[in-house]
Image 1 (spheres, helix red, strand yellow):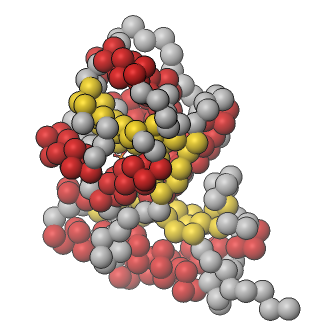
Image 2 (cartoon, helix red, strand yellow):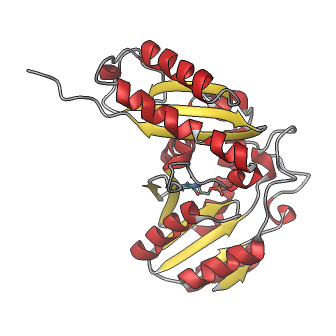
Length: 285
Ligand code: AMP
């Protein structure tokens, strides 16, 4: 595996290879969730490149940029063992300059939900991806459904900016008890870890209610009560039932052919997210 630190080296690597290139952008601290994206790319492309870059532009001033887990050596070993072709591990200076002119501003999808609480988050995600896509020129780029809003933002970005890149969605990888894997889970104490399960539990609970009501206001009210009673230490940021294409809230599940629940909540000050597609009962004729 080539470990590439500069844009110049990256261009030279890219110039030498032929055939489809799969790309997995990450912030490192790799876990099975990331590795499932890597395996998918390895199965679909002769070349797979993973970037490891904690992108300062997607963190707000009060967020965890400085304490975000950085485990580069272990990450590189994992990627090497899987048979990845190259890892791109640039410094911040390699990606940004204090004289930079260009900021990207998302106006709709990127301002909903997480974007409304993490101001500028998706603008920062979009900017770094535009840079990475231009450098790597991948055939396919792999994104986890764990960050569902991010997937939709990236699909829109690629469509609007005419990137000739296929965006591949990969299902969320969970711990055996259901907790969605996340680099931020490492911040949690054992009791916080137990509370964090609330996110998946409430999504599942809401799914069990769907045969009795399809009014989303009812489902959300029941979900909020479930959290208050069963997981009092969890601070809910939002719980929303949306159409998975537009990410707009819906009033009745049948308003959308693909309804999905999104949740963001804090546990011990750690911000966690999860989501689940809702399956509807067959309509009786
Ligand atoms: P991150 O390093 O958090 O920026 O994540 C890099 C990529 O891995 C993103 O496309 C995430 O959606 C994806 N990812 C993170 N956690 C999971 C998970 N538990 N299951 C599937 N994909 C994931």
